[in-house]
Structure formats: C-alpha cells, structure tokens
Length: 284
Image (cartoon, rainbow, N blue to C red; front, side):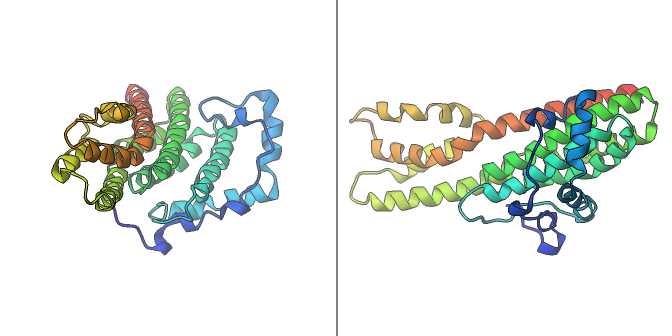
C-alpha cells in the first residue's frame, strides 16, 4: 500500500475546501478540454475567469505545483463529496488553460507537464475507487489539453514545449488501480471473515470461500466474475459450500462496483498517452 505523504508536502491541503469553491455559472459544455472554446463563447468564459473568487482559486496553482505530492487523505466523512474539491479545482484550471491555449501553447505545456504527473500519483496513491476516478479524470483532461498543445507546438516547430510534454508523458509511471485493489482486498477480507464468523454453525468451507474471493482479484478472471455476480441466486440448494460462495460473492461486490469504471479510466488515459507520444515523435 502506498504510504500517505506528510500534510505539509500534500497539495490536497492547498486546494481550498469544497464550500469555498466558486460556483459554475456558464454552460457545462464549455468544460470540455478536448475542444477549442468557440469565438462566440470567449467573452462569457473571460467574464467567468475574471470573477474575484475564481481568480483567487487559480492563484493556488503555483502553490499546488510546488508541493511534491497530490494525494487524497486516507479517510473521509463517509461520503465522496470532499473529493469533489479536486474535480472542481481541475475544471477551473482546465477552463483557464483552454482559454489561452491557442495563444500560448508553450505556457500550457509548462504547466501541464508539471500537473499531469501529480494526477497520476494522485490516482496511483488513491485508497478508494472514487478517489481513483477523480484523479484519473484529472490526468485524462490534462492529456486532452496536452494533445492539443502538442499539435499546435508541432505546427510552430516549438521544440521546447514538445520536449516538456514528451518528458512528462514518457517519464511518468503508468496509471494503475493496484493500490485501490490492495485496499479493497483488505476491506473485503475483513468483511468476509466477519460474515463467516456470524454464520458460525453453518457448514462453510473457508478455504474454498477464500479461494473464490481471491478469484475476484485475479486480473485474468476479475471482470468476468464481477459480471457474473447476479448469478449468485442461481446456485442450487445442494451446491457444495453454497453459503460460503454466496458470502464471497456478497463481499466481492464492494470491489466489483468500482472495478469496471477503473478499468475504463485506466484504458482511456493509456490511449491518450499513446496518442500524445505519437504526435510528439512525429514532430521531432
């Protein structure tokens, strides 16, 4: 399990609390980092970014980049709401970058080349599927902007900006849900042990039950098994270790809920990284 950084090193604490985040007052379609802001929308976006509370939020960017880590803390109050602070902060940063990308892609490359590795570490250090998804989404949105910046830098033969992007994408570790999977396993194992204890008196083969649970965490079988969870009711009454199998499936559902989304997010980021490296390589 990836250890959590000291609070003073963690940019999480630089980004303000959720209740101090500026509210959105423009069309949600303008938050798409993969497309250029249309000319007819630039005035509205400029007015949005000029709001004092938005300018104050964007002023936190240098302090965030100066921290060596961006990692969600281990525990929350039982809801994912606190994680929304990361998502909303990233939306504002993305809107700001998108508004100036056409004029200064090199400046965007400089910022994104530092921010992207932080989102990857954020996801790889996450201890819940929700935290992983929020951080992976930050990385994915960064890559959307980085790809557009690379295309413009290539047209301008800007080797400096292209090199920044190449190093950021090439040297940053791959996105991986392994840490979340480790945390999930510890949690569901404890749930299974507790459930089996409560079912004391029933005939349960704990080894067989644990073997089934472990299969839900085997990369070769996890997705198919998670997809088959709804088949648990079809186990015949005479099925060996029926109660144990149902117990394993019940606790594995905790892991399966986020698995499909994490797999897709991981692939989306990998695909964008590959596309960006192609553009950078062709430009060099």
